[in-house]
Every structure is written in structure tokens, then in C-alpha cells.
Image (cartoon, rainbow, N blue to C red; front, side, top):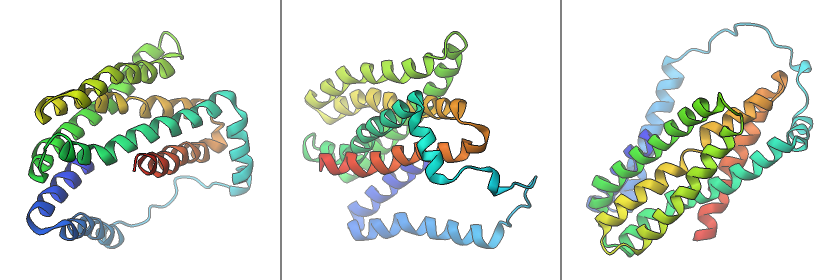
Length: 224
């Protein structure tokens, strides 16, 4: 959310004054500077303990083990579908607010960037806190928290689409944006809880594959 705030606010401001090509350059330069600083200033740490790679199952075997587990298989599907919705919303909401509700690039820079970052960041925190607190009573809480949150988002999305002005619409969008972030922390917790120790990292990467490749790849493409 912090990165999104900087990226949206900076790119929208630069685009409004200097054009979209300059905006692409502006949001790319900080990454190049950070990459150079990482290469020049940060040294590779010595491993805390030795690890025999032969102990870990092969990648395809880990993928097969992941999908064979009934909970993780559904979590993989859930992550992809939910991420499709959230990435599509994140990618196309600024265009919707400008084309349909009348926001300008400066409005996006000043108001949408703050609304999105605060709302989505609050959702990330809320999903983790509620999952842990309710998870003390039942592990099902890690599934119910994001499920209920996404249900709560539906009527607010409809009202936001139908709102007459962009300030009202943006305030209503804050709820779905917040609810869209609640699934991430509980889903990661579920994956790590069911992952064997030797496959914990690979299982986490398989989940992120569904979350990013499927979600970010298909969600915005479908809407577009």
C-alpha cells in the first residue's frame, strides 16, 4: 500500500503535468536507484546454518503435494479468484473514476492514492488481526474472515458504481478496497500451517504464483 500510494500519487501528478511517458519514467527511476543501492551497499549474509538441498523434494513433486492437499488446493483456487477481483479493481478503478465519475489526474493523485493505500493497508492489517483473534477459537476463522469480508464488500461496490458524484463514490469504494485486502494474511497463514517444514518456502511460492500470476495476469486482462 505504501508503494502504491507513492506510485499512484507520483505517476498521476507527473502525467497531468508532463504526459504519460514522463509518468512511466518517473515511477521507474526509484526502482533503478534502489537496485543500484542494494547491489553497492548490501552484502550477502552468511547462512545461519547449512542446508542440504538434497533433503528438499523436487519442485514438481512439491507442486503435486500442494495440489493433492484438499485445503491447499482450494486455497490455491481461492487465492487466484480473489486476486483476479482485487487486481482488476486496482488496475481499472482509476480509469472508471475518471471516465465515468469525472475525476481528473490531479484528483487521482491527491485523493484516490490516499483512499486506496489507507483502505487496502487497513484491510491487510484487519485480516491478520481478526484471523489470529478468532483463530484461537476455531481454525475455520482463517477462511471465514476473508469470506465474510468479501460478502460485505458487494453492496458497497454496487452503491459506489451507482453514486452520482466522485467524492461519494470514492468514499464508498473505500469499503471494498479494505475488504479486498483481508484475504492475504489468513491465506498465507493457512499455507504455512499445512506446509511440511522442508517444503514451506516452495509452498509459499506456489501460493504467490496463484495470487500474482493468475490474479494479476487474468483479472485486469478480463476486465480490459
